[in-house]
Image 1: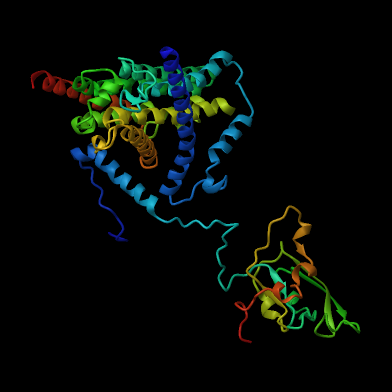
Image 2 (image 1 turned 30 degrees about the vertical axis):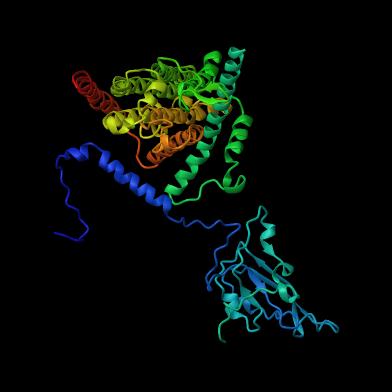
Length: 176
Length: 339
């Protein structure tokens, strides 16, 4: 009974003279290896050349600012609730007078920590966020020797005020 | 006066050849890694210097600064003598290779780019090559390690077996050129290269050259899967470097011998059309191109064919190549004596 059509007929026939001579087979092998010399390799020279990530790649988080440079996050805690790995810790605070240029709404995150060792990069925080504040980017969380260094503080996560320091997340933006 | 100028010329030639040999051997290591990489769709060394060209220097520096180690119970003198002999014999071969036609004139003086044009040149090559086995044997034996010893035993039996067929395969050439002198053998190829006259002899010689230099598919002396590192298992630092390096020097030397015996040495088509001085220069370049091609061929084979099993190696040497070479000698002997 034949289950698949992949079975091969095996024969034990004597090798012909040319097969016993090896040389034709060696010449064939030399042709194969030489053809590979002319092929273009698939290597990406990593630190210098970086392959573009796909649009759905989920890497290190970013806390976004709005067009005027104010933090979007209002410390509502929905991301922390949504997080299945419980990696996010938020301490909320009230915006004082004179801080309107720093925070968009009256409440803001005084502390915003993400434990990158706990994080599973599922992107649920991003889905949960009602304020467009947190996004997963195509940046890779770098390795480290210390566990403590894997807890990213707010200053590690918030993007820069200057426009050229902003992190592009347009690829991950969905129509909401 | 003339004697002094001849001696200086020969010494300078020897020094230049020494440097060129070492340079080519050093860059063969780089070239080998590059060829291997290209054949496996990789890139190869490219970090040390532009295109990785400083890699051999980096490797050499690494080798020199590695810790020296000598196993307990090993014979100190022989342990050092092993790699020295390997390196020495590897470097000695190219002394009889003629790099240019015999006697070209510069300002009334006659010169030949050949260090020693001895009348038994080809026997000298075989003698030096068979001395090379002592380096491996002594190195392996004095290491006081069973893997080293097994590797050394393998190497010596392999080299002795293949020397026979190798020696027999060039007898037609000696018959044809009626000389053992390297320069005469090259001169006899002025019209037709020996490869067209003795293709089977070339094939046997080539296979034996692979066995003599311990290159794949005959690199059983350093078969990692069975013998750890073979005869150089216990070697470290530059002593190991000498063993590895002598393989590349040997490759250069055997490529030079193959080009000289079978591919017309410095001869190239249209040589007589050029003025004598230019022809000499181009001839040297052509010979080096041939040598580099054969070094590439050694590498090409290495990254194509897997290693032979030991009984297959012995079978090939004694039961295939030996009888073939003997038949060759008989046939060409008959041709040269009756026709």
